[in-house]
Image (cartoon, rainbow, N blue to C red; front, side, top):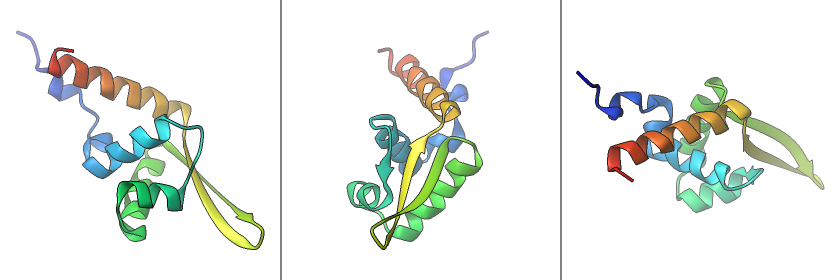
Length: 98
């Protein structure tokens, strides 16, 4: 008896906003919080909530710094996050038969 691949989907990544965050971060070394917020069309608070979940899971690294006198927050995938996203997308390919 085989188990359907959907059981292998990572529930942390599976939420649409978190999946969108992971996909955006996978496409770049580092992404500015503001750019990500505008790209995903979400509020600061919603993005912060989902980033915190990904950060606690060890998937995302949050870096804070300054550009001139303005604070900047940037995000990047950890090695664990890269591996989790690769696994997640592989499971999606198994489900869709791609």
